[in-house]
Image (cartoon, rainbow, N blue to C red; front, top):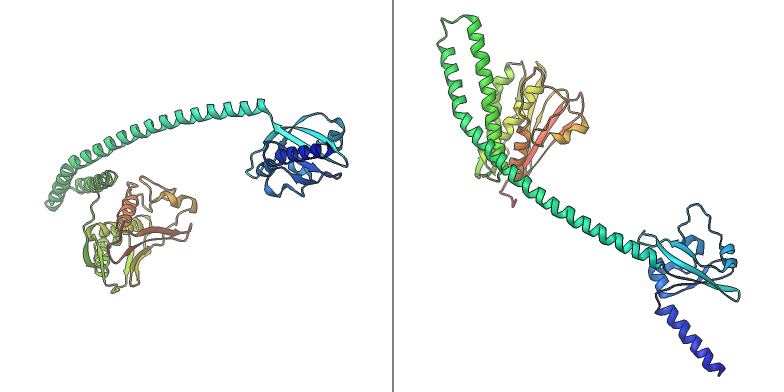
Length: 373
């Protein structure tokens, strides 16, 4: 009879330790965990054995008194730390057993239901937010497409009349021998404004094409050093008006497979920006660096430099910084954003290095051969 009772107790204890959904911890006199049920190890971690019971609890104020809890023999709600970082609360009872004792914890049913209800409510709210976000994104895409179409249409329709204005201004200035100096100055101002308007319209048209995903790269082999030197020559007159010296040491970097006109557009943007933001009588240097697989173009100026925290804005559409052009020259805020798209469409990279008061160095790097973009 005694052996039968011991056998039943042994089987029951083994079941509780291995199969039950209870936190069962055997503690010694000092409060150290000497044995833990399978469920306790799954919740509290496999290394729970050997830890002090009080170290397992969420008790920042150190108000839990183990000796008092053992003497009271009354259940209490205790929150346990878990390896996942989310505390779990159990209804814990202490069962004395000789010198040792057992802490037995079961889930707090009321709290579990509250948590489950809160999770269901949160999931529903997240589903609603997700649906609203999808609708908002769809509406944003629709409006953005309409905006890009409008920009493209407006820029296209404005380009021809502005071009005509520029041509008429040029004719008037060529045949302006009988005009007074004041009239000539007015015509020059109008011509300058028309030039900027055409630049703005062309930038908007380029940006619209890129945003609509219609940017086409027409690859051809080109002498990259010759392309850079020709672009410098085109910008030299604009630099000379401010007494700026453009330096470009001829370098034979070989052939690069790229869109000649679009790459020239990027170089023009680098040089025109450098001229706008450089002081009079300074130097702008274009350098070419290359290896068998890549070619890199750098434009360094002696301008005011760009604050570190503002540099990330430069290659975003309409991105502007606190730095002003040296003589108030206008800018669209689109040139570098367009340049970034062109370079990345070639499989290249683009960037800037600058310190306030130390000038700026803008660069881009292209693969010699067509990259998989």
